Amino acid sequence: MLVMRPAQMSDLAEVQRLAADSPVGVTSLPDDSGRLGEKIGASEASFAAEVSFNGEETYFFVLEDSDSGRLVGCSGIVASAGYSEPFYSFRNETFVHAARELKIHNKTHVLSLCHDLTGNSLLTSFYIEPGLVDSIAAELVSRARLLFVANHPERFADAIVTEIVGQSDENGDSPFWDAVGRNFFDINYAEAERLCGLKSRTFLAELMPHYPIYVPLLPDSAQEAMGQVHPRAQITFDILMREGFETDHYIDIFDGGPTLHARTSGIRSIAQSRMVPVAILEERREPIRGGRPYLVSNGQLQDFRALVVELDWVPGKPVSLPGAAAEALGAGEGASVRLVAV
Image: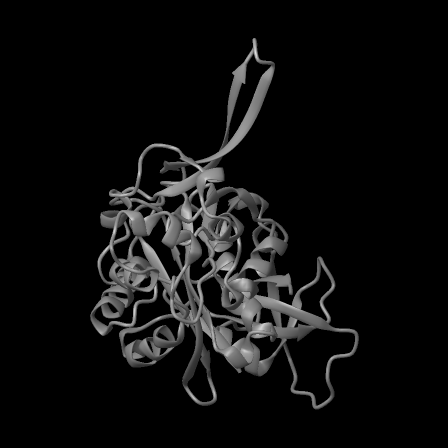
């Protein structure tokens, strides 16, 4: 059974194995035991803290195969993007240039460096093993953290954003970085992202141009890369777009990948999920007929658990959980769980 839960320091070696396989551009998963240890430690402190508003907390979850103890995925949430340092993005804008006497009226696409999204909550650290990309496990890794937000809204902002990894090739070269960032740093995209993962994105971002960049002056390859998604990030992009996130307004300042944005209350897994009392099913050998898969989570903090269960649930009624699923969730008879259809 695959179970989503908060990461623990004992997971460090397994988390580093996942980080080593994550694509270039996922700076929130550096292949460095020291940084990952700090990440897990900060997450443990955040889960343990009493919180009444979103601050500097970070929450890091892992997807565990409970039969083998092996980790197969992870994801995270930052309560406030840019809490301790600015959160930079490129904002898509249109400049209008007009000459009345010449009867010329031009609209030009420009990119303006901004930190408009500072203070929003931020989805980070998504990874799923390649063999599970097209399975329901990817939905669990991405969306279970949204059920956590639904259970603990006071810990998060009114809007949530996420940066999707943009285009780069097998050599770690990015057309957008080569056209923009490389003019200010004599390093390739892969090295820039590695440095950001080990230190901070801000120290590079603050050296980026603070004046508007006229998109028509960029090479065609860079223009075409803007807003495009890395093949290995397509799954999380698709899931979040189905959740109601929107794109087109902001892009990543390094690789030009899309930055998604949504009002927290309007996200599907939050708006459509329901708290439901639990009834324990007697063990049965036959599959549930007429059922469908649901994401189910308990409402706890440090003992948060989430999984996918095939259910024949009728809205307004208690949910009948198989004994193994109820045990994995730590939800006994009469307890309440949050669920939403996959």
